[in-house]
Image 1 (cartoon, helix red, strand yellow):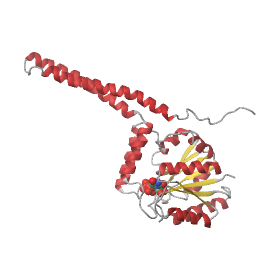
Image 2 (spheres, protein in one colour):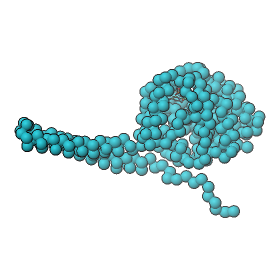
Image 3 (tube, helix red, strand yellow):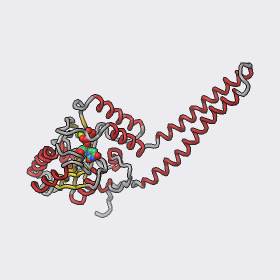
Image 4 (spheres, protein in one colour):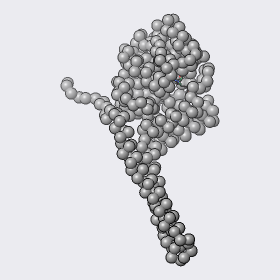
Length: 315
Ligand code: UDP
Ligand code: MG
């Protein structure tokens, strides 16, 4: 039977640990009772350098319950890294992982459906929000704008999926081969390949406490997501350069006509033309150099170039 690890990143979550642990333990006990996962399955709370009582609460849960484990990071490294730390630790001691936020905004009952999908042969199961009714208007619009912008920039992400997902051991193993420091899991996981599917759920309100993702962190995540996966912004600069060169040619015609009809100050024609034309050439050049930097950037990431799904070798 497969050993499940539920990975829960926690940052200053003292208000939710108890509630969260209880809800997750119920789900896990149920899965064990139904023999869908092995008895040594567990919940791994990752303390992302919290400044409150989060860690001591995790310790208490660990002492009291055989299905709880804890991992304490030495400092606050942010949600994406905390989650990665949890997954990389859990992969040594599990066959399948589910990552979920500590605040129970994601529906814990969906974990069972994810496990069912896993048993049907899917390596990655994305939890996808059906609706965003519980989010504020602001959060909803910014979040949806974010997914659209990512798509426009050519970054493949799963629409309305945050980091609530199931990953098989081999999927996490493959994820471990991506060494990049600018980590954006929602963009990386789809690159893994393998069989994937989605399950829908309704996103709830936080059980307690406040969001640890203020606007500033959200914008940073969005920018990191785009700049880690797309060199499109560089193409935009080149495009702008070409556009300005075209405008400068039109302006050249206009300026020459003005010159020959004698309506201009001396020196204006050559000046205005140089400014526009050179501006365009400079932008285009920056864009071209950018192209090379973009390539260096992709090389430096040293991403795995492929991922083998099956190898039919010996019978
Ligand atoms: N989190 C973390 N490190 C951070 C910020 C957040 O581990 O620096 C965790 C947090 O404890 C929660 C999850 O990431 O389990 C998602 O954060 P939150 O619920 O505050 O974000 P929101 O749902 O508001 O986007
Ligand atoms: Mg939340």
